[in-house]
Image (cartoon, rainbow, N blue to C red; front, side, top):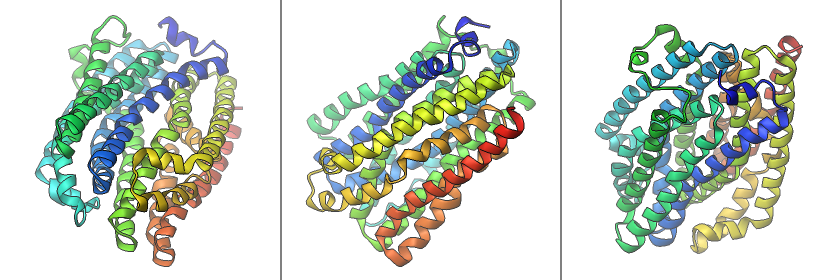
Length: 445
C-alpha cells in the first residue's frame, strides 16, 4: 500500500479533508470556468440567444460524458476500499476495467449523438431561434466529449489513490486553455458559436490527454496494464451498481433541463432560458467548494470504511457537513450581496439585468444546508451501498425538482420555476438527514 493512501487511515481527519477537498475544490472551480467563460464570451461577443444555446447543449454533452464520471466514481469507490483492505490486485483490475468501459461507451454515445443531433437538440429545448445556433455549437463540441468522459473517469480515480493535487492540475489545464482559445476564436478570428465549440472541445481533449499522461507516468500507483482491460463480470457489476448513481444523477439533470427549458419557453420565452443559463453557470461555480468537500470526503470515508475504522468514518461525516455548511452560508451571503454585479459579468442586456438577480436569489435560498444532502449521498457511495446512494442522489433532481418545475409554473408562471429549486433542496435535505442518522446509529456504532 503506498504511503499517500496509508495516510487516509491514520492522519487527522480535518487535515485529511483539507488535503483532499482543497485541490478538489480548486479543480472543480477552474473546470467550471470552461462553462462560465463560454457563457460570458458568447454573451458579450455573440448575443443573448447564444447563452440560451449553450444552456441547451451542455447538458447533452455532460449526459454523454457522465458515463465516464459514473465509471470513475464507481470504480474509485472500489479502489479506495481495496486499498484500505490492502488488496492491490483488485484495485489494478478495477482500473483496467474502468478504462475499457469508458472508451467503448463514450464512443458509442458520440456516434448516436451525431446521428440524432437535431431530435436531441429539439428535445432539450432548442426551440425557435435557438435551434440553428445550438446546432452549430453542438456539431463541434460533440467530438470533445470522449476526452471529457475519460477525464471524468480518471479524476476520481486519481483521488482514490491519494493524489488530489494531480487531479486538480488535470482540471486546471482545460480551463486555462479554454480562456485563451475562446478569446482567439471568438473575438479575433470571429468564428462565432463554431469557434466557441472548438475551443471547448480542444480544452476537453487537453484534460483527457493530461490524465492519460499521468497514468502512463511514474507518478501513478495505478498502472495501465492491457490484460486488465478484459472485462471482469463481478468488477463491471460493482462499477455499474455504484457508477449508475452518477449516471442516473446526470440523467435526472438532463431530464430536469428538458422540463426547465419547456417550462421557461412555454411560460416565458427565449430570454427566460438565457436567464436560467446565467443562474446555472453561477450555481456551477458557487457550488464548487461544497462539491469539493464531498469529493474530498469520498476517498477518506471509503478508505476508512474498508479498514473498518468506524469512529474515523463518523468524524469524517460530521466534519464534512460542518465545513460544507459554513461554505454554503458564505456562498448565499455573497450571492445575496452581489447579485447585480454578478450578472454584469455575463451580459449588459437590459432585460437580463432586470430579470436575473431576483430569480438567482430565490434559487440560492437553501444553499446553507445543501452540504448535508451531498455528504449523505456521498457516504453511501463510499460505503458501496448502491441503492440508498441512488435514492438520495435522485431526491432533489428526480423526485422533487422535476415535478415541481413542471407543476408550479402552471400556477405561478416563470416564478414557479425559480421557487421549485429551494423547495426541492429543503425537502431532499430533510430526508437525507433522517436516512443518514439511521445509518450511523445502525452500522457505525
